[in-house]
Image 1 (cartoon, rainbow, N blue to C red):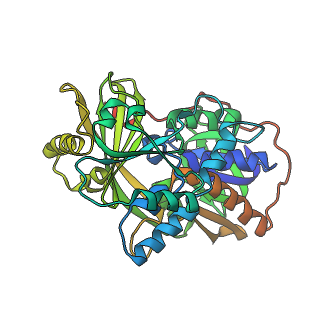
Image 2: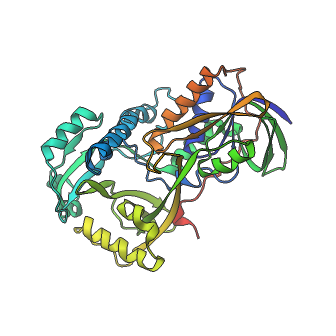
Image 3: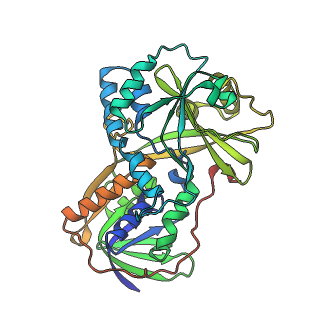
Length: 404
């Protein structure tokens, strides 16, 4: 079957799905192709914090050049909490994330009692008020969880929301399920795509005005099929998790000196009842640990940054590897904003190769894709009241800690 479409999006993570929602809401005939499970890779594994840039500006390494990079990262993220709040509060915003997506309204920022570094509390409180849309708020120890109060020199709260990735994927998928195809086979010819549906083996010949590659690390292979360069880099993480049904709900950044030592987020788990993800330094350095030493390293890190918490002896400790696919930078460092490159492909058409860099930046990326389409003369061609594909129950990836 043949279909014409304004935009053909590849990748069913937050970048692709948010773009599908945004373009459809602007009147575009947009379709999305996913070759596996929705969100498998970076989205389902995310800690889900909608950063406003605070931790980059206030707590990462010192130095003039480093401050410039941190300031750039902060500026890119500064408005994102307010943008997401519009979608959490509904009011006609697409996508509507008002039901069951948000897991927490705030994150703690705290200094461990074992931190010997020197931070001027008043200085960074004033800086946060000047630079951030989500300024810090001091938290009295009496108002904090007991285990945190016993672990911290000082405690703050920052209004950065946290989302639950599986629920987010579901909410992004359901309104446009008839515009999403799960593909068994993909091939390109003269800028057009032939997609074979994995469920019924039906083939679709799709003729797009623009192809959007939003498939994370999958962009590399798709770009190669189109004869273009994805211009991407990979930065590996080995993310730790702790599983136990009696874990308290906890979302926090532990600050050690001038870096984020650990970031805790809480998630549901079919296998463990509840899970803490532990990001930060342990995730950055975890790829160098030997398998046998990872659990002892994590237990040691918890004892250091959260000494007031008694980690259950029967808690499950594990890890999963995440391949962060990002726009390439000259030094292989973290990009400061979203990545979008426009490249010519066969048939006189063009492709956009995109990376959100951070979950929080997905709305900004979708807007930039729309802007680039307008600048390139790609406007809505006809209203699509019903998509061409059979609506399926969203095929959402399982959480990494629930696999096997």
